[in-house]
Image 1 (spheres, rainbow, N blue to C red):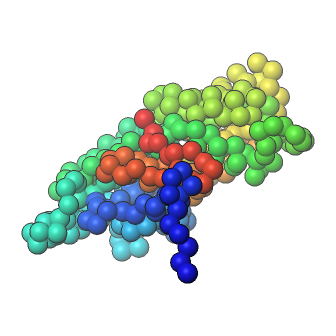
Image 2 (image 1 turned 90 degrees about the vertical axis):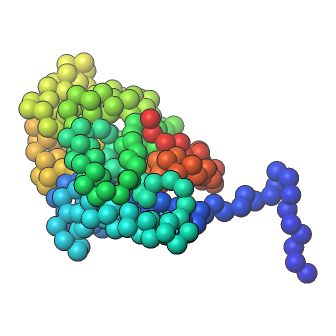
Image 3 (image 1 turned 180 degrees about the vertical axis):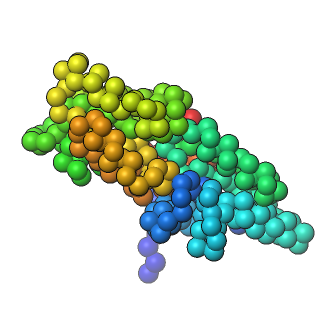
Length: 290
């Protein structure tokens, strides 16, 4: 006999799926296209698809160089052409042809300007979302990356010690003063998790990392760590290592394809399209970054 259908508060929520004809999610990947950047972007899209079955997720590179790394404007032009074809057949849905989500933890005006230009060049009528941060989930991701590198306690209750745990964190970002201010918000959340001071600094500003390291040491921190407030593709190889050497400290890895990154990408897309996502089991509702 079939099991009776559950009702009331004990009923399991129906799974959320992408509506038929929903706009494509186009992940705008900055930086020089590389196999590593492609693998990272594909993993982020895979996380988003797993959270929203039926999602049409595509990847466009700001500096695309061909079939393996298609340019953002070409990906958007294709999405726009498909959208118009569906509309001509009466199968179109209301809304933009695509929603572009920048693969950026914080604002970078020069990169965002290039993304907007690619959108205009495509003629697709796509919509651009905010960057992913600041957001509490990124503070969680930074904590995890620091703990993986042995630079922070893995738990929030401080039930055990780590001999190499840092007592001061430099939160490294790119994008100038606007990016530093935005990173500072996530930095406060990270500071609350670790109970150590966290200061943001721009990798693309001469001397900013060393000045921030000196400020932390002057205030009493002796064992510093560099925490990249970056996804990864937006910076050149060797930049993090040089920054860590400049500060005289160890560095965690960039955020990469951490699960929260994929969920925030999807959250920004869902907010633009008007889809309400289910909260993860035992976890928070994923709200878009603002």
